[in-house]
Amino acid sequence: MRLIVVVGARPNFIKVGPLMPALRAAGIDAKIAHTGQHYDATMSDVFFTDLEIPTPEWFLGVGSGTHAVQTGTAMMKLEELFSAERPDGVLVVGDVNSTLAAALAAAKLHIPVIHLEAGLRSRDMSMPEEVNRLVTDQLSAMLLTPVPEADANLLAEGVDSSRIHLVGNIMAESVLRNLPRIEGRDVCGRFGLKAREYVLVTVHRPENTDHPERLGQIVSALLGSPLPVLFPVHPRTRPLLAKHGMSAHTPGVVLTEPVGYLDMLALQRDAAAIVTDSGGIQEESCMVGTPCVTVRRNTERYITVEVGANQLVSAEEPAISAALATALASDRAWKVPERWDLEVAERVVQALAGGIAPLEGC
Image 1: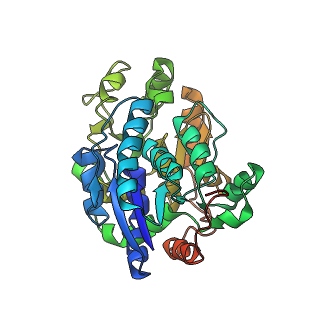
Image 2: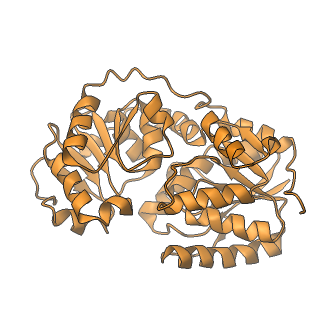
């Protein structure tokens, strides 16, 4: 079997980390196509190094742009690649624009699409990722789901059960495989902080950063944190924070550049609590045992809330502050969800071994 595995952004890189060795061990000829949706060293190169991912066979150099420009450019370049290579299948991961572009290009060429992390739903069509998830799932011949709720979502949308395989959370496997590699890694010490004595923050979603009133409420809550705040900041977000009184000179706040996967994993492990709007960090924090506060209207990772690892709150200072206080007092006693283990990539291999049934009419 010949597969092209398409990646384009940070979450994709993390998910293919444990997958590529499992595919190779099973005798599956899988090569990576990197669209270049995230293309600088801090958002791309360092993750391939940290996760020991094979060098991509193809780098398409899509770059940034509006959702339509980025998706359209990736689709055109992927169509050319798929037409030339004619793989037995195209494996896409997650919900970024590259995921949708690859699914559209492959489906129009009648090449089966395999979607890893299928079936997640936020029920919020204002999220570009939700649009990407819905369309990708409808175009996929094989849907590899992380949680039982995802299976239920797909069945309710009319997806045939024979196409759905509950493999578990590949992000969780990546965390488990890399925890031994960060043993003794004192990343917080580089910033003058001690383990369990700081709050780790990531905020990057447009629903927060593009709305000054919401970002102002988040900053206000963080400035009131009882512990120092460590905030790896995207360059675009830094000047927006400054408008609300948070800068590199703010007492009790450490703003730093984005960090690599292993360093970020160590920072999550050692934090007293995490405040974020990232989907992946909700899952990673659940795995490393650090309580999380997610500042969003909704989440497609609601299972992390159900097990007690995560709180979902609106972008309002009182709600964030109250949730942070609860997180800091957490006993960290939640149970990791079913199939968030070291066997996810192997279950993917088993699903592929059963064959990929093409969509009706293909």
